[in-house]
Length: 242
Image 1 (cartoon, helix red, strand yellow):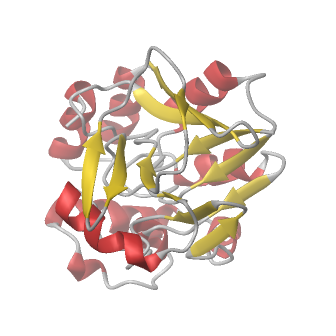
Image 2 (cartoon, rainbow, N blue to C red; image 1 turned 30 degrees about the horizontal axis):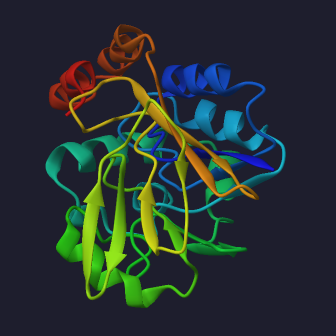
């Protein structure tokens, strides 16, 4: 079984469609690690597109929870608050109801799935090896998939520490006996200085992971954000992937 791994779509339908087109024929089922809405101009369209995918497992992210009122938006920075408030107004009742049905954590086989971290599934950012090392005791499976930071990366446990491994886009990564925390990066708002949408394909039985990047029409997403008077910083950052 091959699994399409996506995360942090953030209301960017153009990027999502580019990923789905690029991955077409490469997967049997989909794991989405949360933050389907927030930041971008297409929250309802992204909800409907993801909802249309067959054999889907989806988690809730912090922006998803904020959009439906389960998290106080004052805990976000100003640009994020502005975008979330816009998303709250834009969401249809059907989209809102769909977002309320997602779990914070899911375990399937040797994989634990969360949006942010195994220690704090909705909010904590695993931004470095130190934070990663603190999170290994909080899941029992060999591997944990996370999103939230928008940065593709693998952390490998070595004793009481963690070693950071950056993506290799030229070959498959084979998993062995090591314990790993794995981030596929962001579909809709990459933050690793590469504006291309980021995702991964997992060979479930073969334990092989493939990072992928695909360009999309950033200017089209920016145009719709501008039409909706979204924060200029959120618009400009898509161009550079920061």
